[in-house]
Image (cartoon, rainbow, N blue to C red; front, side):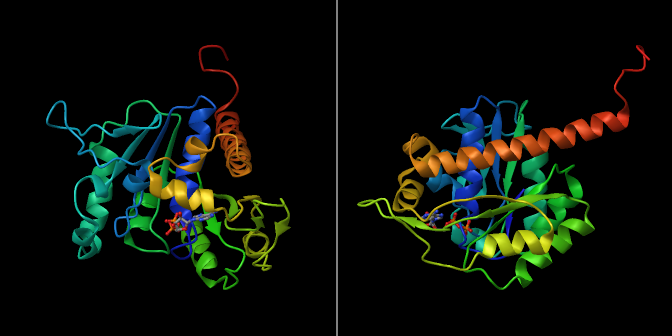
Length: 261
Ligand code: ADP
């Protein structure tokens, strides 16, 4: 799950680019846009293709840039979803999880709505979630929102794998000097407060913003840029944490299968 205390911190941008970074490393990846009030995945991936059903029972996800996608934005205009209430929102999300033919994937990323609401809760309760990543910004010093989100994940036993600080610093495209324009350290402070690792920092970069509007996220549009390197490094660290968790689960079940033991 990719979560944030509030909107506009770059949660969808981070979700999309981390998903694409793992796909670039060879993983099979899907991304569910659960931000029903502000679905930005169709725009970011440059596709508004209406999903089709092969068997009239399950809907096929949309394929773009090598990963599978599902978003309410493929079905309705954002204004239409704005008026939905809690139970409809949760029902829609559960349908997306159950009735989409996700196939065999190594990772399913879920871009959550900001904050703590019905959608976050029903996903955390109905899915066996591997973990959550919290996205913050350096100036996001009011820790109340992230703390509340962590509290919710703790309650539903979803491990928080770490914090990603987005829009951390600016590298001047002319001289290459790094400018810490928002000298807040919000990501580090949030990670310390929540007792989870800071997975990495992503610079504020005009390319990220342009890529988001162009239909090809940064990792695809600028495959060799420093921002892409930052996303790849975070994605690999995340993959490491996830496999350690899987190993943990395996060691609890025992090393040998019943037949062998
Ligand atoms: P959220 O999902 O938290 O609401 P978005 O991912 O939609 O946030 O990002 C909000 C806006 O900020 C978008 O226009 C996006 O392109 C821009 N943005 C996100 N991250 C960066 C970044 N690192 N550098 C520049 N612009 C960014």
